[in-house]
Amino acid sequence: MGEQDSGGGEKAAKAAKKTSGKKAAPVKKSAAAQKSAATKKATTSKKATTAKKAATSAKKAAPAKKAATASAKLKKAVVAPKKATAAVKGVAPAQPVSASRPRKEESRTALVRRARRINRELAEVFPYAHPELDFVNPFQLIVATVLSAQTTDLRVNQTTPALFAKYPTPEDLAAANPEEVEEILRPCGFFRAKTRSVIGLSKALVEEYGGEVPGRLEDLVKLPGVGRKTAFVVLGNAFGRPGITVDTHFQRLVRRWQWTDETDPDKIEAAVGALFPKSDWTDLSHHVIWHGRRICHARKPACGACPIAPLCPAYGEGETDPEKAKKLLKYEKGGFPGQRLNPPQAYLDAGGKPAPPLGAG
Image (cartoon, rainbow, N blue to C red):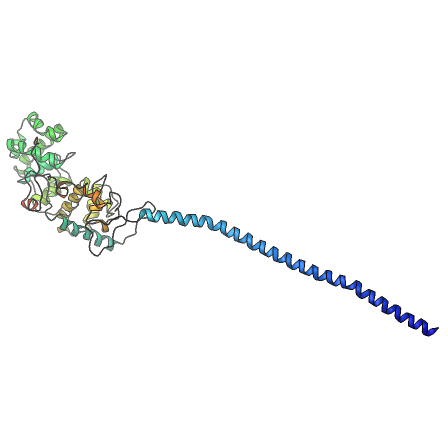
């Protein structure tokens, strides 16, 4: 009986073990499945995160791409068109000005070099530059310069032949009938005020200087209607004494070229004069004024036909297409008559044409 119990117990134990093994298998299988599911879930989550990052990155990249496209378009828009017809040797081609481009800082030495380079280039372009008022003596020059206020040199030149034919000396003009002088000067504009000026000027010359035009700045500026600009015109062109003529063209160009930021004529004169030797002042005035009248106009500069375009910080303010720019040129540069009825021979030799007299064609 004891053996039977023992044998039965062993059978029961084996049966229980077998049953226990069968039940444990599903549990083991379930754990593996859970592990697999967790791994799959983690992979899916990682993919989702990666996709989300990619989407965010793409979203951020979109404005950058758009900005890059806009920048490319802007860059294309400000690229210089055809180069000016007469580029300066050894200087990089000019680029049009842009509102977004800040003013370039320039050392004093660099400014002096650039200013003098511009003057040398203009001397080659206008070797025949001269005062554009007709005169044969200092008296005629000072009277013509006074009359040139608020009008063109051409109109003065067309008017003074009749004036000087009737009143050839300071004594004659000092004793003139104002009404007769007014009638002659009417084409110049402001003829009443100008009549008072030239008659008063002539009386001062007769009473204080024996009928002669003085050759000193301090004496000239005391005369009626004579300021520093007129005085330097007379000193430089009638007496050969250096002076800077700061007229409207000169003021406009030296500021456009960034030689100075001054607006007062006397301060402009001092600032520009400091950039050049005194011996250059008179010719410098002619070069700048001639360039302003013929090429670098106030409203529509002919940038595409400008010989100093690579040296100009304002290149692009005007017409840059060479063919269109050529149509903007004036006087002899555009194939038209100049401002003097009796210009110097050098001007005529260079192809310049004399202006027509008053009332002609």
